[in-house]
Length: 439
Image (tube, rainbow, N blue to C red; front, side, top):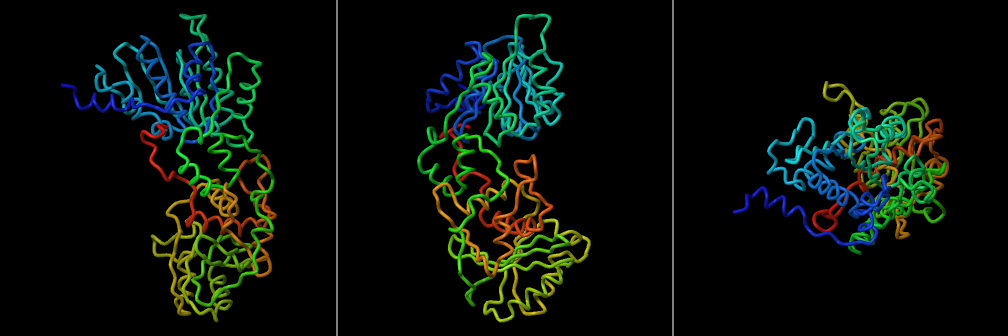
């Protein structure tokens, strides 16, 4: 009778959908390519192919040392650890896996180490046979140049003619070091490198691709699902234009959405409404050298004649500072003013700060998604500061996502980002990875 653990491990080797580029990829290292560069679509099987290739190599070759890396230890553990234990049939290993070191000890004397490269020196000083690094675009360029490539080029005195191999996997993220690596691999000028590229639509079901297009902006979809290297332009929301403008005004029955950035000057907040799946940004409150209570007094005065005295409040998690110790936070200051003026309110604020990039992508997808649908509209007359912000807020020089905070308009865009990312986040998949794609 086959032990239950072995049955689970066998089941993990489920069939994958064959793809000609993927089949060529698994032959790359045996045919002499040291560095397969794999910018392929999200959830399209690139990481799964690497896990299986690594596991097979480890099981076939005795007394070797392999690695599987990612930009941080948490990422590396989440991506690789449990799967590699299953794929290498670790339940049958004489020496149990080291959960503290994230290291597998195969019966043939071969080891596999899962590495977080937030401390890039972890890869140094080991005579590696080969390995791979996922999410390579998120890795610091200095770590690649100063630690990883020198480690892979270090000659093992006991095998002077051998050179370690490494798969470089990931989704593009601007024209950074990964772009340079892909360009080198595509050029064919260095036989150590070869490019392997495919799109998610070549692997995933049409309904999954359609859902992704509705959820993402065109630029983000092309980057994430088509693995296209997108240049970071100066203007953050460059799809915003005349088709996002509206002359709409508030209806008396509508519940208000009030989104904040608690910067001292200018203290910026905006007021909008949700109509179906669309957001209408219709007013803003911009105060110089003000505090949250003053913004609240401005709000209740501005909307004293609004019929529906109900508002949803959005903003930065940092605005809750002090609440655990009985101190007034920005939110409690606002809510106290609202109560005293007979407003009902609901606070919708994340428990922790979200990624700036994720928030920006959420806003981009509302401005115009990959199917060309626009579901964010601004009244350029009654919310002029917000309208100007969409046109003026730029990236900090040299960054692919950090916003130029020298522009006063940046603060209202931060407020918009908090609200949109809460109601329409793009982070996370809406389908099970499972056997369908085997990331």
